[in-house]
Image (tube, rainbow, N blue to C red; front, side, top):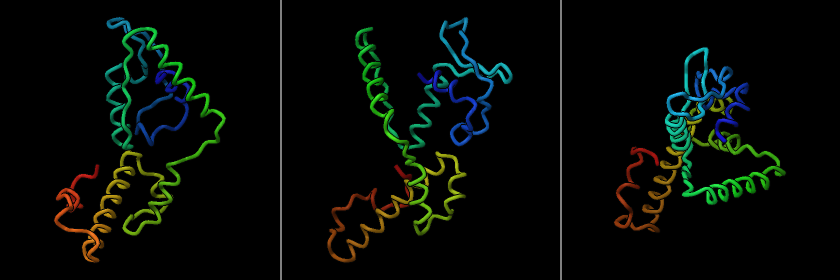
Length: 172
């Protein structure tokens, strides 16, 4: 499915996801060594095989804070059932109007005190960088709200996990 989506959208601007990777010249080809279908850019020699796909997929999921679903079917019947389930989900989504969740998130971040970019500057950020900002702002806001509760006497300081008190730690 990734290959089909990639080829179908290769003329779109995907720089926000893939940086300076030239997607326009990719074609599907068969790797003679592994017998698998891969994406190849004959101009640059870049090959997207299973390993590259897995790395790309893990990166995009991690950058966007999305849990990767890596269900593997044990047999053909199970595989077919998973495919049918995915098709049914896509069919249900087909009639719904497109909603850009990223645009709403960018707008929200542009309105948050402490976020240094306006809407148009933030839209130019790579998705991974922007999502890191979102997670960090959420972490700082959570810390601030917890401390307000401590100062007001509504939150017991001793029961707060130490990890929650370090707003400088890596955002999850």
